[in-house]
Length: 282
Image (cartoon, rainbow, N blue to C red; front, side):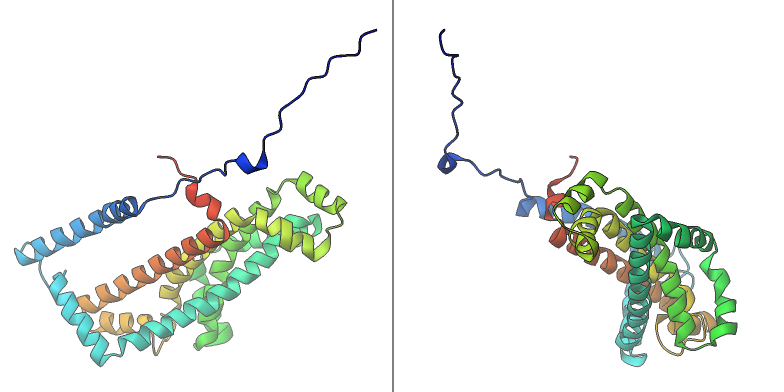
């Protein structure tokens, strides 16, 4: 009997393997992207300047951009604007970090175990539907008019988006991957830190973006609680004296803080998840 024929499969030489190339954005493409992003705001500012210069809008209702620049210089010199922004930013960061860490811990616990879900999920879902502005008078009665109610309000508001996204991210981790890691002896804290949380990073970063944005939004309400410094203090004073230019400057600073928070999270995403930068629909 003849021996069965053998089929030889050529094995590629490791020296001739070609490393896959990830297409990255070129410098000119990045500049064009920045120009397209800036086009909309520039058109709005141009229309604003034209309408105020031509007298179509009353300056007492909407000051011109040049008047806002002068008002900004005056605030910087006379009201220590840099200090006021620093006070507001420290409040947002302190309350936001506390809420984000708490939401991350509770979302991980509820996502990993049925006991954690039964203990935390129903309560947090119920509290999430309560408007945070309704808690302002209650917090004033409970904690006074110092810094504590402001920080608690920001922490509570930022905790919920972080909890929801972390919970969803942990629950969406493939259980087969977890069982495979357990079969290799990876359990407990190492399993959570090295497998579960890295796989849930996309959802966690989404929660982080929402939470930091909410921290800036709630900061506006929190600083209405008898603030003696910060952007909320400037807003209250400007409302009392009907200084529209100061109100618009404070609103613009709040917007810049929110944009900065979003850019910060985007930078973290590129550092921790560099592969997502190449995933885009053109």
